[in-house]
Length: 259
Image 1 (cartoon, rainbow, N blue to C red):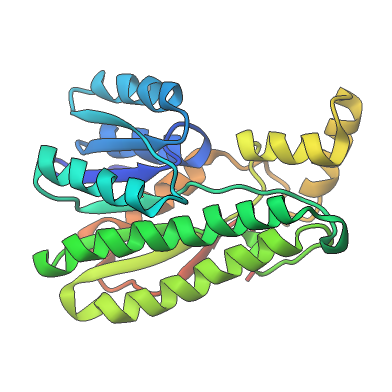
Image 2 (cartoon, rainbow, N blue to C red):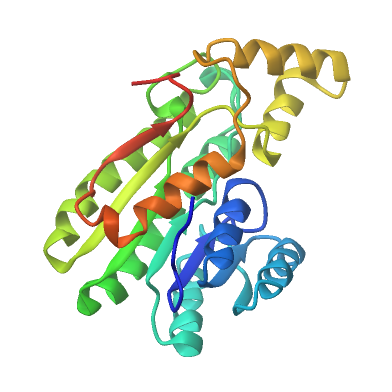
């Protein structure tokens, strides 16, 4: 697919790895300057270096999305450097598995803070810039877990369902200002997050990990492995002017896992 984001300014949280990294690189390949935000500065800088190789500008930015002051400062940075932000992808997230009555309060709070508060904080700051400009694209990352709920994923599913509701409401709030807010529900993709899930569910024994991974994939109707680029393509499309009439939607990119 070909896109044209020349002159656009994009911000991607969780941009140092996984789906966020793939989105950041795709925007850069198609002409956008990108602020890569990540909790780990070395990951953000590595992706920013790759982006600069495409002849566009990049900012590597360390941020804890659960800290509102840090999120606000991140948006101040992009406006100071590039005057505005046109595209925001909220990809920072965490999945800590476990049955609810056995889950620690620390893990519960961490999941809620990153997946819900982090997304809300970023959307709040993005809309404060985009609405006066009468232009903007926001894509939030939810999950198939928001719809296809499984044992051991109760807190994660709850937070990702919250992202669906947040997106639907914000899309309606900002519609008259020509700001589109959508979210994607990715399927099962072997990113760093899924490696962490395998750590939690299968430990370090490789055969156990492969068994859990293969078992998790059997419910995907098309039977094909999914890659991060599948999510990046949909993210990019939602940020084009051709998608101007799509807002408040949650879109499954999961090989038919959900509907």
